[in-house]
Image (tube, rainbow, N blue to C red):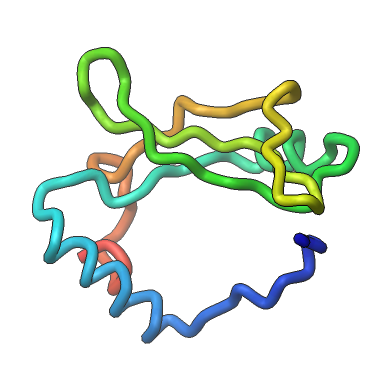
Length: 102
């Protein structure tokens, strides 16, 4: 059961190692995606929403995409509510070079 208060924080060192592992295993692939505050706030404001789930997805042309959906305490997607995509993928939107993206 989810509460929305799960301890999911990690250190920069841990995050850097995890993202480096992914980059090494998937060279040239999408590294991540950006979702703005509004879509995340709107997802979390839905009744019974305690968190969000991000799905890896592909558009019809085969390009990468991320889909984000609210999740309730029973670990169920709130698929009848708000769902987001249209994330700004990295690359090209990755900001300055840092240990998470390079």
